[in-house]
Length: 573
Image (cartoon, rainbow, N blue to C red):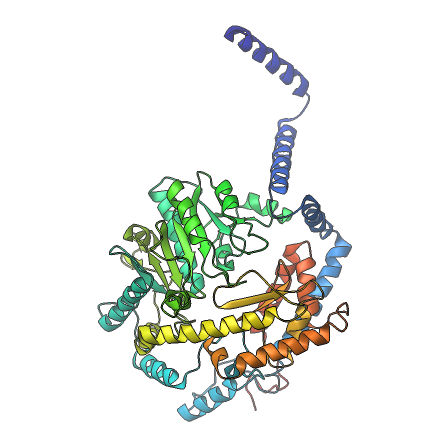
């Protein structure tokens, strides 16, 4: 067909369309067009989720619309209020007999009075967290280290690294911590980094750095993150939904979200159902022109497995995409495992293509809570992490991390911990922890009714069951003094092994209690669950995930809602 004929046909088509639509108002046409576009986007989002079956996707979609029905909406709100009451009662059970300060004391208290009352506050609760019954949370309670970091924090309590000229010693400590970490993870001469307030900030800063690098250097307007489904939830914080995508959120698509803080699309890649490691083929398939960052966990929080860092880094080299290794949980374990006699596949800067690593000093680095490290292979990435405001009337403002003022005392305490342990101390601690970790894994594999998930390489051991509700185990173990972490998708629980578990008899007692608990449950495996087992089981099965989010928000609200049986003008009697 010749060009003139094509032009003539297009003209005829235009005349025909204009004739057919002439009776419709422009507003109606706009609304119809918008509706079709929205429906098409919904359908595309509905069909593209690789993690869920069509049936499961349909259930979630339908459930989200059912919740809008007034009667259903009313029932949901009633249940939310019930949950709120129960959670507030549980949160305040240890403090209800005490008074509550709703106002500042009219007159300041003496040092002795404040210290005495603070001591009473800190003795509240029935969890003996020093005995080794926790999964993670507290990683060491060495009294000598406690005395040291407390003393050093007291010496530096009023310091602020925002003013390096005023506190040069704190500046030197932070820089030395970064340099020691670079050596731990085999960084080259260009490697650099900063301290942060914790793992979440370290991950947020990596996202911020790669977002800005993609925009400012590579010209990518809408950068995206690719990460395994087992990657840390801190990446979900990256997000701020555009209003249009808030409408699409009713689809509850599980693998596509948008960075809460940084307006970035987050694509979750499925993990291998047997190994629970990242599916590298699926990750490569999901790479596109907007991909600005690939993630590998070492190890991942849920199952203690290390993603195939080498293969993911190879994708990074192939497509020129930065690769972040999230070692926040176990960085100060896996960095020393080879020296402790437990070699691992390479995961650090020795792997060509790894461009950043995060590791928490406040976990297995045995520093007080509130410190972590983010490292980069080159300053060109760290530069994008920095914040600089050049037009503020208050002056040129620059900060290396999310915070402006930071507690120099935590930097000093972290430095003190690292100096106290030294390389030999960390290697020895890693050897004990890994031996205990392997002992617990072997013991759990021998318990009939349990399945160890994958082949955990460090820190965590997760188990599930095909015979009974696994959350019944965590409920029963809680009564014996053990606090295990509940996981989901699939339903499972895990123990994060810390230095406290290396104490004589602790690991043996854990395996004994697990064996005894599971044996009792296996007598009636189909019995109805009670307590937290009901909540976690229900939460995992609810198709509309926004309902789960609502309940979680109620829990967070209950933290700040104080209840007391004593009323005395805002002051305790």
